[in-house]
Length: 351
Ligand code: NAD
Image (cartoon, rainbow, N blue to C red; front, side):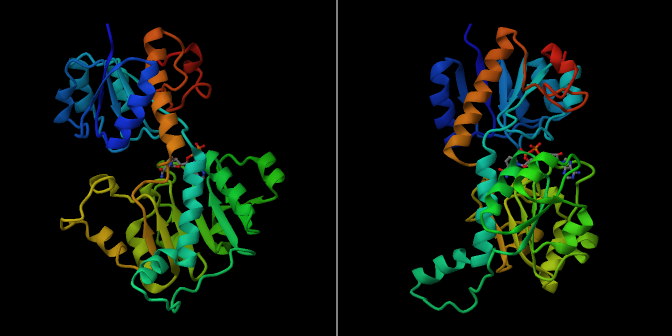
């Protein structure tokens, strides 16, 4: 029987890319705008698979309802899985697969776009010239050449960001809990400790995951160690930055600019149109008042190539699941890793 997939929190671009990729699979696809939570989980009745994105909430309560509705598989169409209660999924015997990488280039390139836009103020110039204001007062930037960029997290995205940034002739300082010394030698940069990154960098860019260790790594203390006028870029996860501390740093002038594709309380607002409403989040509202803050709405991943990879990998994960072949993109509930990092996963399935 044709397997039925229910997409929560779906947007027009999900429909376009998944319908195209599904021509090779022939699943029955149903797209709902609602996000998954304990109230909307009931909608999964009659579906074999639920397909989720970053702001769906697969809590224990929601997963229990998915189980009652005989859902076999949670297919995440994203890399992060902090929104899924993995222990509950395991207890309820629902497998969880994800798309571990769809386009690290997309995110790294957006990171550099934020850096350059903030520095050269092209977002302001665009608005000015459309109003026939050709003054350049207040638009002065700085040469990237010769500056020091601190890169925190040198996984797939951090590495590509380093490769791009090297083209500007900047000095790279990097920190990672698992430094890649060969890559550092090849790209001619140094690994150092966080304190040194904070004190030496003109620009700091975050590319590590959100974990208990990295939560609020940018806080009052770390900001105090930074250079006057430092520019901070975050395309990783919002909670890496204590936003109130960031705002204090911006108000005092210690922080010279912030480029944020993610925000710690983004789930309520990002991806949605609030242009005719009053927003209640005073912290986000304050951030938006700074001339030297540039916010994009979690769009770093948003390229044609990434959406094509997301749709194809998600449908392939589902096919592998029903074909009974090893699930290389299943997340192990015990360690949060996927094959081949996890021993259990070497057997092909988490359970
Ligand atoms: P990755 O797993 O390839 O790399 C993450 C790196 O962070 C690894 O090298 C890891 O060793 C390092 N790390 C782990 N803990 C650390 C710590 N405490 N301090 C310093 N480094 C640490 O991941 P990736 O594909 O490069 O993605 C990086 C992050 O980008 C993801 O965690 C995700 O949050 C974010 N992301 C954002 C978007 C977007 O659209 N904005 C899209 C995809 C990914």
